[in-house]
Amino acid sequence: MAQEVIRIENLTKIFRVVHEPPLTFQKALHNFLERKNNCQELLALKNINLVIFESEAVGLIGANASGKTTLLRIIADIYAPSSGAINVKGKVSPSLELGSGFCMEFTGIENLYLYGAIFGLSRKAIGRKIPQIKEFSELGDFLDVPLRQYSFGMRMRLAFSLAANINPDILLIDEMLAVGDLSFKEKCFKKIKELKSTGMTLLLVSHNMDEISRLCDRVVMLDGGEIKKSGPAGEVIGEYNKFMGSK
Image 1 (cartoon, rainbow, N blue to C red):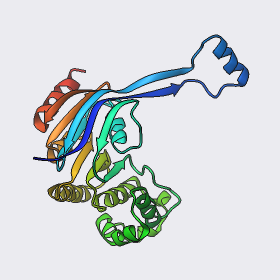
Image 2: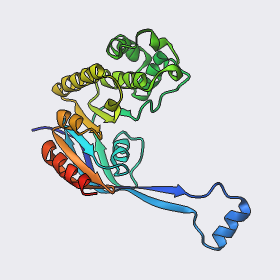
Image 3: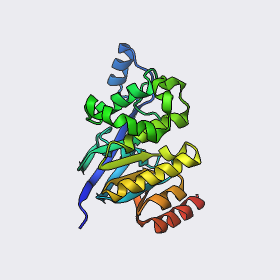
């Protein structure tokens, strides 16, 4: 029986949004006395319950602002839930947003060491990984160039190559496969399938239903921060297409 690697129970995430610029002391005092509040609470996720198993590939789909990226960031321990519980077992390797976490003034190599440290790898350990990351990314001498000179596609290659080549237990991908040429996408698909065969778990956020159906065993559809449907990829994608067509 497959082992649980992620268990989420009654998870809710609320963001506080400030609608005014920083207040003066006098304005803050006036708002306090008048009981005025310039903050709004936005419910991003509501009572999420989800269990994901070892070597499973799960797609997260939904319209913009449905809570997909927020959920991925909580699993990656970037955001903390407002309430509820989450238990993650194993080493998580997130590829969240294009170039997220990179320093644009550092070279590709320097960013690999920086990201490696974030993943808990020693300098020696990431140094051993660099040749295979370099080969996979096909960036060559560009690894010695500052990231501000990279295109979006080049940053995607660097981020995915690092995330996929540090032997993660759980790989999180947020729209990372949407950028890049066809041949590199095929290379990424092949790498993901190779990692899955070793027991890696995949969570993929994408608006590309072809990518989702190709890579994912199960799909979770979110809307308004809630899970509306979870099940086999073809079934949930069909439901999602009907739902989006009705909007």
